Figure: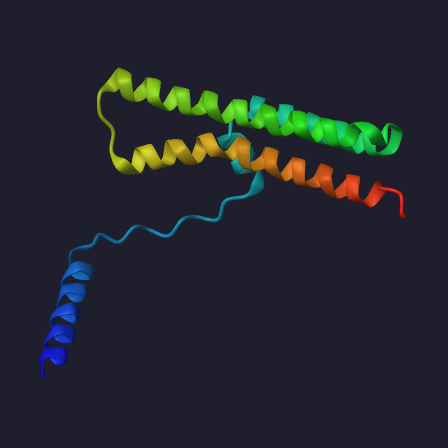
Length: 134
């Protein structure tokens, strides 16, 4: 009997919480170009140039593939840190911001890092493929 009361109370709590929650509209379909523009086109272009340098190095100078990938990773981390700095600078300027705005800023600041990590993974895969077989 005690367990049934606990389960009923928990179910009532869940129902009351979901009734009071605000429903957010579904996120629209976002293309890769939208992410590219959102993540600061200058930063994303620099990482894209490093990706092209990796592909060129895979063809002309295979020893530079991993190092160029590391440069892309380090540059993307630096770009994300600059984005976080801009977020905190804006919060300091205006004093307050809602949690949704803060999360949106973090999401935008993380885009170059995500792209840089993907470029680094591509450089590692190319490096693995090019390693001589033993």
